[in-house]
Image: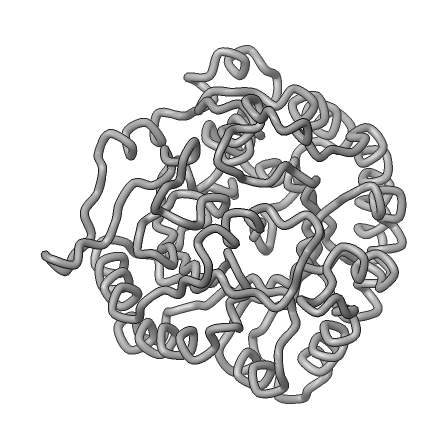
Length: 373
């Protein structure tokens, strides 16, 4: 089932965060806007509208900060969604895993899917994802995951790992599989590092620090070995580059449908990489609606919706003759726009990597049990 089939409403709760990840994709942006938190009346209105116009009853919580930093707000939104949407409502969260015992217990009873941003063994993770005070965070995450996976009260909660791949962990992927397996994590998605979203597209960045990158071939070599090893021991080990390998599609993700991601400042974004609506700069093409305080409703920008929907592999010149276009869909639109400044831009190294992966591991034999976060 292609990644774009993951239809849901997402809430970007707050810019507050208790970690200081070294590669944060919106760290500079969050510093510029200071603290912002979504207002409950906007979240409720978004649920009313989404449930009225869509069959999906899936809601999701995501950055730009750490969602559990606004725990009470998250509880209120889940409670309201279940009141309006009934027993069919499912809840997904992407979290850094650094939260209290009280939050842990609530997650057990209220969340269906929890993706933890977790970069592997402590010696790797604690370098890349320290706390705001510069302390290790891995021990807290391990404690929470072990408790959630061991409690006899466990219901329908799936805990998966979302791993940012850097030079520190690309050569240790099979080791990461073992580490997560020992924690009881059976579903792992890896994402190659990409540049931070700033005021200027990467291609026009004059600061000298234009691109954060690593050796893609080394990542692929080690990914294939870890993918096969994980399969042998009963784990799922995926890559963002393969997120559409389980079904044919001509669009990469939900950004091109689009589906709503409600920002802390009350805008409607199409993409996880565009988390603040006001002054979205070169990423403004993703802001396709906003809350209007006067009318007490959302207003939408039809021209932007049209442009997003037209971004298909059939309409992108470099995709038209690609042998894997139907198992890619033009790759991540957020990364492409951030780095090239264009809706139809291309990440050449990623294209090469996807083609190689498709040649060596082929399409998935079965639909993914859990789509990429």
